[in-house]
Image 1 (spheres, helix red, strand yellow):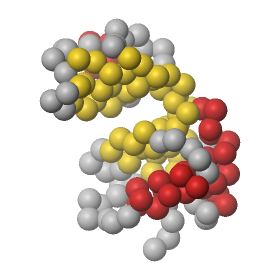
Image 2 (cartoon, one colour):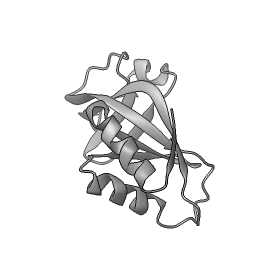
Image 3 (cartoon, rainbow, N blue to C red):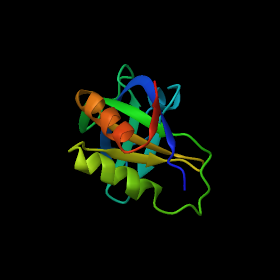
Image 4 (cartoon, rainbow, N blue to C red):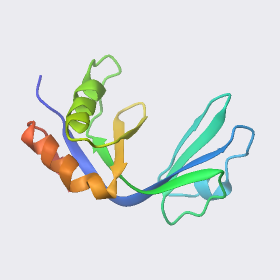
Length: 127
């Protein structure tokens, strides 16, 4: 199987943790790109750094690499293989998925190391 191409998004993102009962802030819903996940324990949102969200905790300056797709939901091992490349390069990741693809968020400070690791492993990264 050919290795995927990843596209680096120029946006810097912030990951927020909110109380699980908190409403989704309107600022999130008005953002040009966002990711939301909710469990019985928490509500997490990922938005561009310039979107102001009142949250219990946050971590900013993340960059997103999109696995160009669409990817079939029956495809196996894509996240594991990419995660392995990042792990070997000592790059922490935060992963979000959509119906069509996956996004690997990584700290901006790890970006060069991550891109080099991917390219050295045969992946194409577009910027």
